[in-house]
View (cartoon, rainbow, N blue to C red):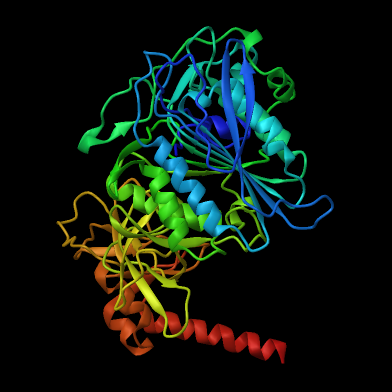
Length: 526
């Protein structure tokens, strides 16, 4: 599944749209249907394909309140165009997805599956699958579109230039793409098809295991990339008519939830897993679904799947679109929306990590690292920050072993106090500047809470006056904290103070004047 259309989906208001695998060119339809399933012929110009509905017994009668799951599963390993390289794991992805749906569907839910494999998965057959199969879903039903295959890119049309700053639209490569003027399926066209289904009130989900970057090739470690070379933009007469109307007034809000195999700048991969060729994202997602409880939300599910993907490839990071609170916090294939989880801890490529980092305000690790408490029964379980990166923090569990298959909700339990900034003026002898959780040295030109400057008698440090208040000048910067907490009787021996408008006086004299002033105020109020 690919997350390559992530950026396109944000701009277009849909989840990532990517492309499908290659299939050998044929002139006869492929009618691979399960026993007992009904086949229906769909014709597209000179091509005819057999679209097969696999319906689990228990079709919902008219007027029944039982919900129905409609699934359109597309897997393309062989393409008609010789310019599109073949893949090996897409049909296996579809078979595993269908088996998972049969075992995971809620009790009392009917399941209607249409599969399009290899030569069956033409552009017209996929569009017809949306409009004649998924469009049957109504309020309370769920519609699932699963695509495993090649992804690619085309130049953005002039009318949609404002949607893609890169100038490229992501595409799904259909079985007949790039033959007889048949174009790829644009990600914006996919958004139109998903919207048509969602308008009927159904819960709509798209799973895309493909990518769009150019140059199909082998990746490292024997990984095959699910990408085809970019193509020129097809003529407008080949595109869906609703495309221009949808984006005429700008980018609409997404109505479907998309699980994408990678980001827009990345590539989806496939490799041999469990003795079969599989898409890395499809395999990770189905494994996460089998491991997680039924109430697991899309957000938590993708976190588990992402951790599995990153074990095999550091260059592929699955995405969830949209990521905001709402649909992403529903259980897989629909259900009641759960409260959005803020911080979560999961196993990633560098070990256990929390989804917050420097850009979220987590302080960098120094002598006093931050800690995160994990939700669960007593006693409190914590993890300590080991490395704080821009958007995530690598942590080490303290005295407990997390379950690698789980995503834990977390919260900050300890944050180190901010260090006092100290500036050293020119002419001051070098001060010991080892690592400290309490003091941070800055350049002399920068503002600082404490400033060390040359003195007539010895090195001295002066604190920056705050709001006109009297401030102290400890003889050593390191004594500042000790002076602030020491007894009043000891202050005269450790420092001298200076009022902004008065000469230096002893600390005991200064405190005497303060006490006298307070006494006069109490007398006046009495």
